[in-house]
Every structure is written in C-alpha cells, then in structure tokens.
Length: 124
Image: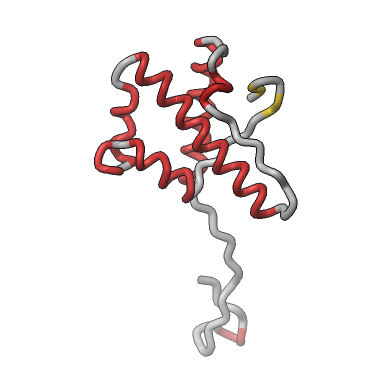
C-alpha cells in the first residue's frame, strides 16, 4: 500500500505477534476483536496494528539484508489518509495476519533402515 508517497509493506511474525498481544486484554491476541469496539477504537487500533506490522516487515528485512536501514511508519503518517484508505489498510492487515499464521515446512524423504523393500527410500 502506498502511504506518504511510498510503497509500504507489513509482516505478521513473532515480533509483531508479541507487540499486538500487548495491545489486547490480558496480553492475549485471542482478544483482538475487542480492539474494534467503536469506530474510533477501530481506526486508532488499525493504525497501531499497521505500525507494528510495518516494524515487523522492516526489522525482518534489516535482519536478512545487513546494511538495510529500516523506514518505519508512525501514527502521524496516517493523520490525513481517508476512511477508504483505512478500510483498505484493514483488509491488507487481516490478509497479512492470516498469511503470517500459515505454517509451511519443506521436508525431504527420510531413509529408514530395514523398513522398505529392495533398499528403496521410505518417505515420512
């Protein structure tokens, strides 16, 4: 999403999960729906979530690319965006959280002695 004239990215990772949990009652992300009680709470918290997940993205990029200087969004960066843009941002953040929760593990065939016919590999 373009914010303040620049394409911005977001990531839901362990770091951002922890920070978002701190916003929630009992520090439990399971209570995240409570951040959307009123329209004012909703807008304020969407902006907070965007800043947190942008930090998650920027810090991850800096970790993977030594020398990269993170450029974090701040709450002030959202002062003059429209409600339509807030709605679009909410959709993006929800998608990022869903994608961040998905687990994908690459595996290779495991060789198990004596468990396969003709010495072929067994797959786990």
